Length: 227
Image 1 (cartoon, rainbow, N blue to C red):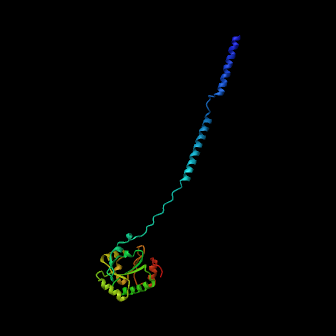
Image 2: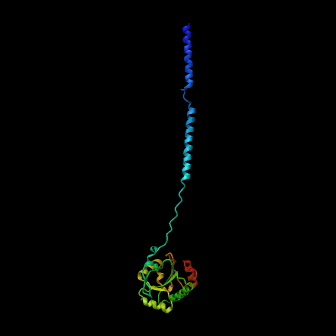
Image 3: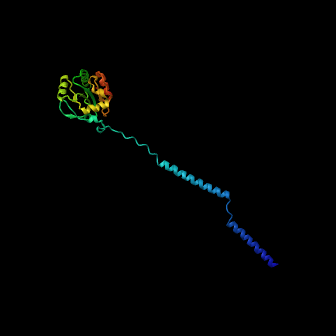
C-alpha cells in the first residue's frame, strides 16, 4: 500500500513538472492569422521606408531645366557668295567686296550710264544720302555694263555729282545677282534696287522711281538709324 502511494505521488510530481515546463517554454506554433498579420506589417513598414527614400531622392535631385538654344551671330563667313565677289572702285581703282561693309546698311542701285531713268533715280539717291548723312549707310551704284571702262563710269558719276561708290559689275557678279533677284536686275530702265541689311540679309528687289522719303523709310526698316 505504501509502495502504491509512493508511485502515485511520483507520477503526480512528474505531471506537475511537465506542466511547468510547458508554461515556461511553449512549443505551440503561432496561429496562421498571427503570422500573416506579422508578415503584412513588415511588408508595409518596408514599403513606407522605400517610399520615404524615393521622396527624399526626388527632393534632393531637382529636374534639369532645358538648356537655351544657342544664338547664331551672323558673320562674314555666312554671307552669300555674290557679296564676297571682288569689285573695283571706279574712282580709285581699289578692289572691294560688298562683304567689306558687313554690319552696315547698303543700298545697291544696278544702273547703266545710258539709262535716263537711272539718272532720275540716282538723283533721288543723292537727296536721300544728304538727308540721312549717316556713315553706317553705304550707297553703291553698280553698272550692269560689264564691258564699261571704270574710268568712263567715274566720269559719268563725277559729271552728275554722284559722290558715292560706283563700280562696274563683273559677268560673274551679274550671273549671281540674276540667280537671286531675277532677270529684272539686268534691266536698268526698270530702276531695280535693293538693300543689304547689317546682318547680310537682303530686301526684295524694288523697281520704279522711289521718292526720297520712300527710300529713307526702306533704309530705316532695313536697319538704318533715323536722320
